[in-house]
Length: 139
Image 1 (cartoon, rainbow, N blue to C red):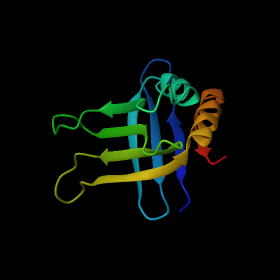
Image 2: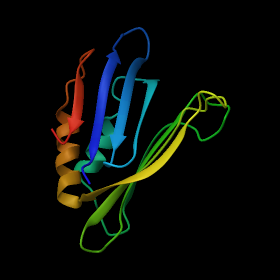
Image 3: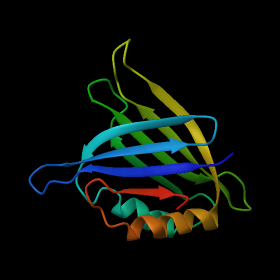
Image 4: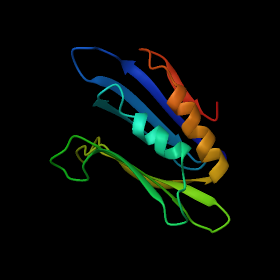
């Protein structure tokens, strides 16, 4: 299965929150979400991925919104080891909290080796966010 992790900077505005779209795919499942946040929303996540894992029990959590219908949307990316040899996963949960017609909720995993997660974090930390531009992994 081929993993895809893509981020697009839809709108960058110094007076308002930036608008991003994230997309994840493991070759079988695919889901995306548009959300608003500050421009450096990925900064600490990227640093944590570069340094992952600190030990076999290390876990990184990146969240936007809340898993509660009071929020417009929810994105959760949990990164953790599943085997002592370094096999790790990104556990993705995306919910747009839409109504019965337009709503969706997706949950699936992307499989990685630790070295690839570290390289992904390095690449994401170097991304210069420019409106209309995207970052993706693999590059």
